[in-house]
Image (cartoon, rainbow over all chains, first blue to last red; front, side, top):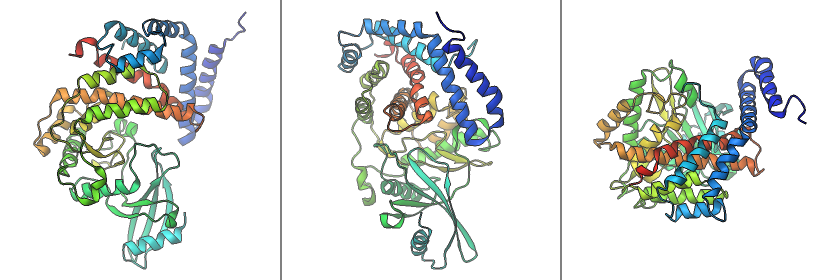
Length: 110
Length: 336
């Protein structure tokens, strides 16, 4: 059984407390660092929330990568064995989209 | 920092025995170098300098301070808007490490601030055009067939700068053990589509918003010459216009500060060279690849445990956004 609030919910609460109660009183370097901390917390929270999607895109890529995983794939790409391969491109895009959404979620409507 | 030794060295350099150093303080600076402000007085005349020396953590691809200073001298002589190169001290006995001394130029350099604060930089279309002109002056500053003796360290231009760049980026990835198929995909696309470079030139290699300074009326100086060398001039155009260097203003294609048309106009008028949009688009993809590799290297400095830095850690995590842009620009139909 999962204790409440969950780890992800705690991260959201920590970020909100930081932004609402700490950041307004800061200036200069401290404020800059606090905003970076808030950003890091959001990234970690999104990574937890979207763990299934990340795993899915990673499995899809490894499924077409070769026996030795990413190392094989890197070597094959460099050797020109996967040039313009639409299946690989699709898998890479899905992975980059998922990871980029964790770094910075798309604005609604964008 | 030994103020007396520094004073004596500057006094000797300027042949001004009565020079007095009034203030030395750190300036906000890059992750590669440390900059200090030095305020001095010779009789009734105030003179302010920026002193630049290596920071503790340096990355391999940046040039030595002395080489950077020689390049600064060459572009200063060619009329590029840069800080005045005042002198270089190779003797580590003075301050503990070699350093360069340059005239202080006032202005704001921080990229996000320049993109956001429209009270800076003067008319933004004029600024974009001016930057285009300055870049053209850089590209025309030296003839790679007859470089001055002081710049012999530049070697000969690479025959295929794009392929050389790709080889360097792959070596950097291998150096940190990074397995990034999306970046590899982009590098391979770049290899297949590598353009020839019929007219190599002096390129800045970090010409972007964040590496020049502006005051209220416009451009005051172009900074950060540590990556300069022979290369394909289009690389600088692509680096400046790449979406990853627009600081929250993707609509302003010239560095987040102006229109691409104004930037190109300034460049074309000054250089007389026609700009091939397809070549610039190629180098914009290469810009994302290069920045992605540098971001991975910066992240690796934190991840390896060598250096704790939340800033570096976060930089490492921005790579997927760059990969997404790279993959969009290198779809299978764009390979042939």
